[in-house]
Image (cartoon, rainbow, N blue to C red; front, side, top):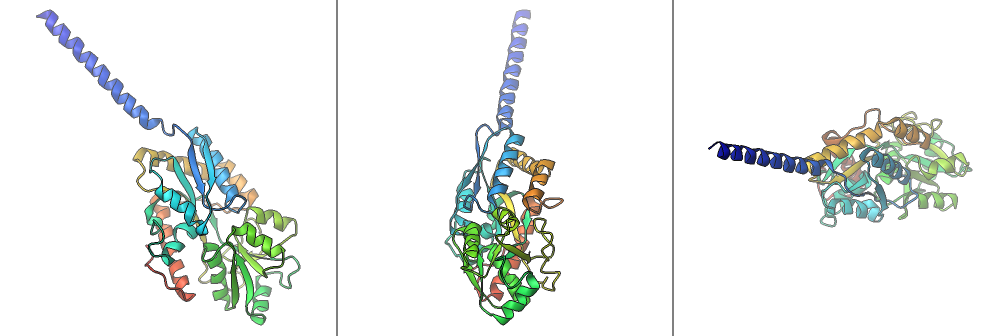
Length: 338
């Protein structure tokens, strides 16, 4: 009888140990994320204004997660190709992207059933890497040296050309919103090759001005005296060009729109993966390393970057502003903003 009880006791201990080991193993599997490389899709060409951000973010995120984060440039369709690839990826945390209003907000308002996603609500938003109002750029020998002089020139010369990184990109819409606010007529000149191509065209005398994002290659071109930044098309001066006035300063602060950027992922991430990715991403954006780099490179990082649901709410609100602007420009959005 004693032997039988002892046998049962030992069997129970063995089963308990086995259960604990298995449970620990399953828990360990969750903690093993990431167990392989993570791909960060940048939906723009290499060398554009978003490229330095995506690479710096990938470098620091890799250190936080102890994994290699590889940047994959997947341009096309005004960034919808790359954003679409993020949307179609498995929601396992191994594919994320650098999205912007040009990819997940504006195109769905204009394209019905042409995109696999309908708006920012179809993605999981992790963190806001930086915020951006576009700047207006001109050749160094242009007859206008700032926004006020450009407005006067444009009123006397209606149809002045304004280059951009693409038709109905958030950057182009930022320029057109300024033109609406200033009551001037400009001729949009969108390029398909992003900001790099439009800035090259500006230097070649093919357009009168270019609306572009601050930072990236623009910073170097301006410092070298190859282009002149007339001003920020937003309510404040940008850090990259503190001497360039803002649209609000010269009386055109109403109805302006920003280009919102977000680190996005396919919707439906496992909770633990979502938490780890979000926490690591936010730690990168708030780190001294990233902020020092961003300030030196000309990118404006919010003091308290939004993340998760708070960021998603902001992006949905901005979608409404874009829709209103498109209507004012004579376009017919195919759907309501989310």
